[in-house]
Image 1: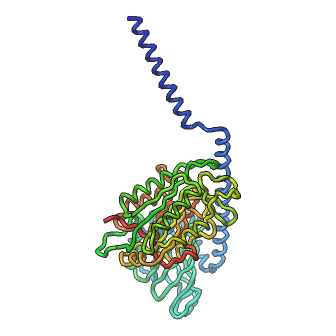
Image 2: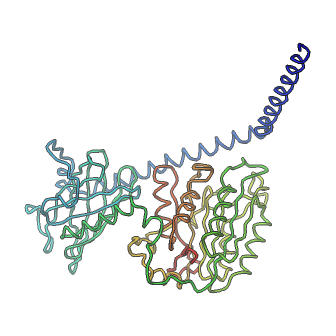
Image 3: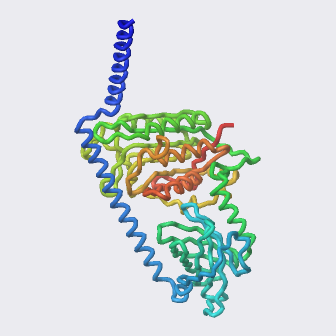
Length: 479
């Protein structure tokens, strides 16, 4: 019996030792890196942190300078009103409870804040045309506590159209300065805060009109119905051609630090597009070199016709020399002179050569270069309510050459949410939740919102030489 017990003990110890050694071996293999690789990764991280820090300082400084410049333009009367602090002020929790006033406004920020309030003409101010120069009032964020002192100044009246400035100081420390345009009893405007937020607002002399705008804002920010995609309609959204995609995900680099999210991103996007959307063919490059990437771009060009819709998605390392941006293939050297880097201007040439009616280039990478700086306000600044089926059919028929990137002139983050970059995560989330169709404009607005609290500024725009004609890339769910 003693011999049996001893034998069992030996077997147990041997098994335990084997399992422990196996586990140790697995852990070692998983994290095994040479000293050179570790040093290289540390150097890469330091470089990214340095560039990020420099970009943050530059952006803060620029915003501070711009705000100071706008602050100097407000009148003494406006300034004396907005700096007033009245402890007896009561928070008004609903736009429908505002007092009777000349003008009611509704606003939202690019970070998702909803804002409402009122102004009344200051009858003691001078008249410009048929308008009093100054209007004074109050505003309220939908956070249950923040109260703002609001004032506006008419600068010019021409044939019934009014141009002016607006300013506000709030109890939470937010200050904003901006401009507005008015025609008779309604208008719109925009303002930028001392914290870098952008506010878009509409105003009207009728409370019910402003109230409906606030309802729309709240719907867009809470219910998710319009955020996920357009509601069902009797009008059929019908593309004339076929959909194609090229997805490029570079993660395992020879000379650069390896990335976690790009391959996960393109694999998941591929899966969603294949299962839920009517893409005729989806090309994919995982850990591609320069030759492989250009080969797939050529294949994409040969596949598509004048009536088709093409999506190109790149995730991986990017670099910038002066104003020129580059994609880095997995075998790319650290030096641009090696000839392996892919100049984004070359990508632009490839885009020009593709005959498709719509091309959407999405880039989740550090730095996009000066030629790819976005201007979403020019042709995509439309509310979701305006994106009805009839209008989307126009978008489908008009030529589109658009790019959407996760950042501008700053480094972007790798894995952030569930093994995906934040850019890819939100894009995938919208594709999954969509029950009808979503446009590039929808996607850009939602991606911008989720990036509002981090040091990345998504860009949306086009390049003049691409031949954009006010179309939009539309993702349509399979019937």
